[in-house]
Figure 1 (cartoon, helix red, strand yellow):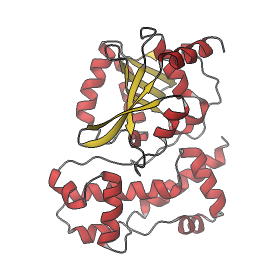
Figure 2 (cartoon, one colour):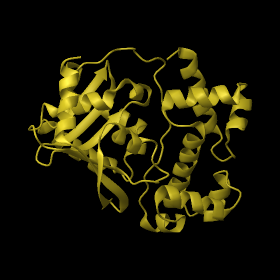
Figure 3 (cartoon, helix red, strand yellow):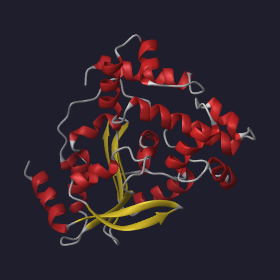
Length: 288
């Protein structure tokens, strides 16, 4: 992707961060940056994998959620400070994204983000990655891994970082963690369970999501699991407004819908990849 596109997306991200307490829409941001709103929309979406509107909304709701837990400000004040014209409008979208009302979220006293500020690489490396580029993760990889988690937190609602870090070390110790890095930057990461044939965490750097890395990680994992077993993971339920495209990505790769679940109080759904599909991915990757 050309460097100017990344520069423009970064300008838009910086503008959003400086104006989180204002009404943010595509026209306003495009005018402020002196770009066509159509060009800005296309560029932002290509770079981050989600629309500028979705990103801005998720950032404002994240900071509103932080204030709900860490301040005593009235909900109406938080709503107005988040760019909403009324408490009702704020409450409706907050509940759609967080699955509980602002008052209920405040009562739980546990903050988690929908979207953290995106920090992009100035350019991406146009590499055709191979299975051998994905390595078992080491303890030294944890800082880069956590940077990737910050970029992709939209895929994992309710993630508690302290608990996650402890579990990540356990996955690394048991050799059930895989990572793909360029220099000091993690662009893909996965933890999995051999016992349950499941992917427990999978993240791809937003700027590399269109390079087939999800499929490559699944092919690599097939080498670690016994043949003949389906692979499972959990993701958003159908219609969840907090989903930034993960559900469609897994369906595109051949995952099939299974049972509905509630994890950490959040409604999710298990998806399963048939063994034949999983092993076909591995064969294709090995013979590419």
